[in-house]
Image (cartoon, rainbow, N blue to C red):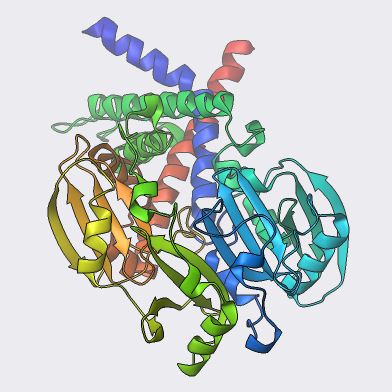
Length: 496
């Protein structure tokens, strides 16, 4: 037993010299991340910059597009604006995307040129002064895998509404990322530092992943050993000769000991949850993915009743809805158009015998037959949610998952597949907004909850939750800073 304790003491002492520096950086950057997130372009931000689609200035029918149409060789078609002009974006496969002029039906130049990027950036920022910064495959702000289909990216610097760097897709000419300069500066002491992105060089980087996993694992061991040592050294009954329950006379040692007892459990759980965020060994990965092709049933869908965007825009105008984007989609082979306005509100347009109908949501009984094709398993549970639950909830834009769509009402379905998968389907769009296998639900608690306290009741607490997290983080800073001083003194003494 004494040998084991001695090994714990030695491991904690020598691991702590470097480990406390890393923990100090993690806690400081974690506080910054409460208020400043990693650069991203959320759907709401993107839609807010688009002009309204005018019925009298738009657009060629779907059948006249160079490159195909939905139901044929195209999986989805979206009518939007690129560089201030209406254009279709056609997705033909997960890794194939094409932009087509909505005025002529001709394919736009690919790859998009520097001039195209400048026009898109100016339209996005409101015709402000801009500077072309060149083309990049990937840099410190563009690690997201969702950008892979758009690479290489054009960089454009704009001066208003605030100085920002915009990243423009070379595949379509659309702005795909907005990185304000103030956000970039804060990220050097925030998310970029927190996730050790200075060691990451590509969107999929196994070396970076394993560096973070190993460091997080070592930090968890360091924190757990500190908790054990703190308990071993504290006299719960009786006191040391100094009259204190702690044996240490040095202020730094004493504060490190007491701070570890007060905040050590939080420190240990917080670093462990950071380790879980990396999905080590893919322990939280599902065995199978939902069959989205069968759910949508896009192949062979007849969009003839919805081929003319001018009729769709007229129908929406009659209801007072002002769209900035239209998406041609299908649900189990049933065609529909999903319209977005500048506030990210939606409408559904469907072709019926009497003409076009405009609605605001699907009925659960319309969704369930299509959803049954997601897995080769029965649906064992179903519920209609009009409020968020512990797994399906909306985060603020600065959060790591703040860009994810979490609309209400939502249909929750649970399947009897080997993963016991739970699906959340947005009734306003028919999008599968969230899919969680049993292992992913476990990972949700081990990472998101332990790391950022993100249950809906705690998120509603707002400033109170932030204050509690900052207080505990300051406890972590106390442990780390005192550990750095102790470690430096010990190292300097041994070297001398």
